[in-house]
Image (cartoon, rainbow, N blue to C red; front, side, top):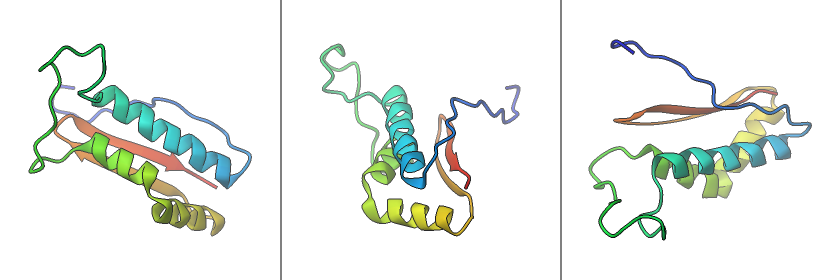
Length: 104
């Protein structure tokens, strides 16, 4: 706002296990990605209403979806939490910066 960065918390969850914390983060990654960037093939979107972002531009929704689908990155996040360290994923593009955070 007015040229300043503003943080807005979109949700939170106190997970009893790392596995559940990562499951929740994956669901949030999809929720945020789908809210920012619906699939152009969605039935409610008329032809030509939505179009893919050109590859030369940063694409936060695609980065969130890639992270959610990447088993190796999920394992790395789980190991980080197991070591007592926080995990943060940040994806950015021209619309903003979107961060997912888990703390042990």
